[in-house]
Image 1 (cartoon, rainbow, N blue to C red):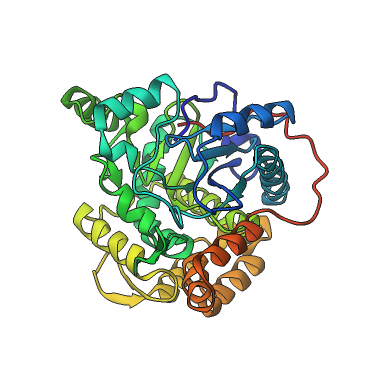
Image 2 (spheres, rainbow, N blue to C red):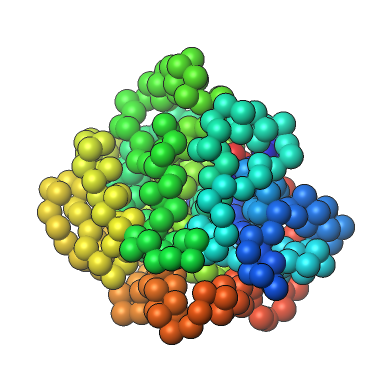
Length: 392
């Protein structure tokens, strides 16, 4: 959740053979001595600005957010993700803290101070403990589309695959020093908001606008920006925003999710062009499948949202891979994605790494190792002065 939103332009899908893509990543700041969350995000953001990077504040004072530029290719995006992580980590170090890519704080209290921004103060006043306990970090993928009407239809096609993306991205098993026994504790915490989780099926952009306006009128949201569904049309940009994923341990993991997210949107656009309607899967089925993915992660059980049949998460991801194969073939990315998913089916994701590591070392060492994984070692050589691709 960024307190500010981008007004920069983003390329539409018709300016290239494949849609444009951008990513926002949310991070926890931690103290390298106590390894507790650090509440210096305003100072870190100010230092980042001096380093030539626009680092956004998040709802909690222990969080910051990076926004990538609009990218034409995944290779370009990956380079930006690496560079932004390195710059954000440098800004954190200059303020005596470290950057940590986990979906929920590994240690610390249950509540945190709200960031000093008018919108966040208003959220704190309206939502109390719900806002104060909202120190969770996601990876949000923006993919270019023509307009809101197209975005709504794309969301209808993509929503069925949200449980698969959540299982793959789960990176928040350890929270406040304990094993929650949920692969994505972030997803469980996030579901407490009145407009979160998988979205309903919307018949049109007007239908979407009507539902959002009704929720604002009811007082459960401050405005349309608080429609926190796991996939949604962007409020200010011609993009579809996929929001279901935990922030990833590494930039390569984030690039993998972006690749799949863009392929899902490209596949949906192809279906729309051919007049194929999205399957109107019940919201109850999607919520059930999402909950199971949050519990089990990539190495566990999943639920087929269509049949509610129990299948493995790896089988669900295999079906996803088949679904988007033509789009991945078009960009030459199928082989690398297939290899990465095969590896994940053996080694697991971020949550599995957290569980294994906590069994081997103390909590402090777990946090130290997670910090090391967050920031790439190799140097990046590019300018990140560009309009951000994302908003919230």
